[in-house]
Image (cartoon, rainbow, N blue to C red; front, side, top):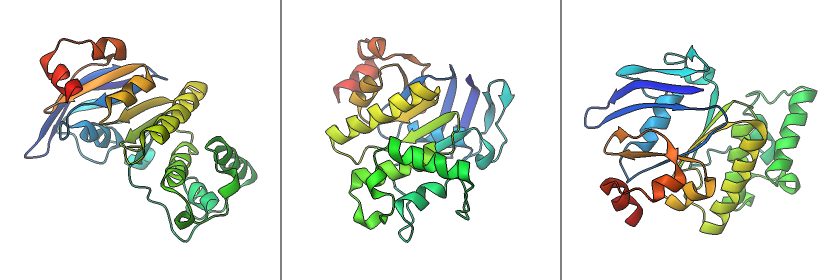
Length: 231
């Protein structure tokens, strides 16, 4: 279980509060207006910004002060962050070994995830030869090859068209369900939350609501939620 207790982040001109629990293996969409604090939550969970106060726990262990690289999570941003001089395979492998010196098991892991994301025919291709959707798949593969129990997606698919975005959400949803990954996805698109089809955390002006079932959320009479859905 991921526990966020009395979290408070003060960034000067912006403040965020959050208090919620997420069961292991849950599929969570974080939605809300632009500038509401959605990405701030992920950055706090990942350890990229300090907490003013509050505690973050994973399976009962306090991870609040752990360095980002030691936390039980991977994070994927909208930017691909691929190395132009490396092949698809090496761009994924570097997520395991920065020196690219993989053992047999790690090589098998990389090849397996390449197949999962549908890039088997492109493993020796450079990023500039790929489409935007294919580059997104490479970035996603690099995030999941590390086999961390939590995966954070920060607008990772927002640059894609509706059909491809839907395809990517299905891919990572199926992967998460199969392996019990706790998936937390920030998106501007309410349709993404509906496709993920589990729970939603609504963020508005730095205030974070507790997770609620997506079917309940989209039928909520809360004015802020209605304004967001109707926008």
